[in-house]
Length: 122
Image 1 (cartoon, rainbow, N blue to C red):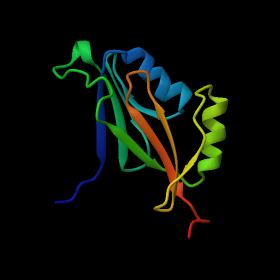
Image 2 (image 1 turned 90 degrees about the vertical axis):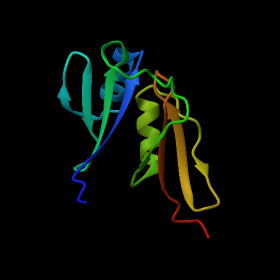
Image 3 (image 1 turned 30 degrees about the vertical axis):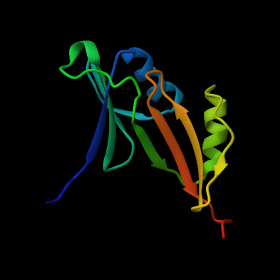
Image 4 (image 1 turned 135 degrees about the vertical axis):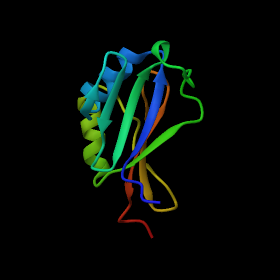
């Protein structure tokens, strides 16, 4: 099996707020947009889509049990970016397994994890 891309779809009650969050706050590139579905390009092989629950056959999970984990090159830069976007991220956490992590939530309650390798970890 050869998978060319991966796409995670969030079905949202707060669709407009979530689209605004990912487009204007996080700054993800819109790859495709309909009046009820927006697909964001995360990189060449990964997508994240936001679907309006009221126009879909699947209900929102209301942010329960989902984390999108995104590895980034520089967690400090991401922390500054999120602050400047007005998202008030918590302090960066250092984990014993050698990563540095920030967790934020979108308007629907889905958890977004930004992480990078902690080059200073032993």
